[in-house]
Image 1 (cartoon, helix red, strand yellow):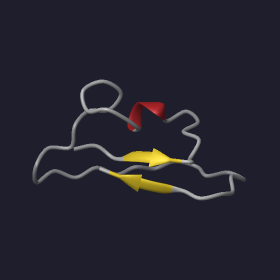
Image 2: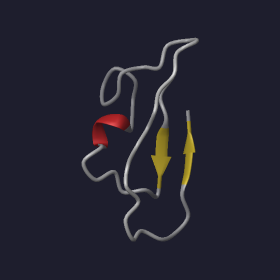
Image 3: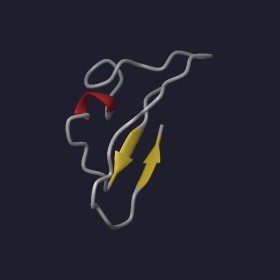
Length: 50
């Protein structure tokens, strides 16, 4: 599993947004992942899914 964002500019954190094994290491069952990034002055509708 990975976490994928929509509407959020991933400045300097594109390695944490995407396809498991391609742009992000997969989150293994029972594992955890802390995603930290700056929103800056972005506005709009944002959502995520795994």
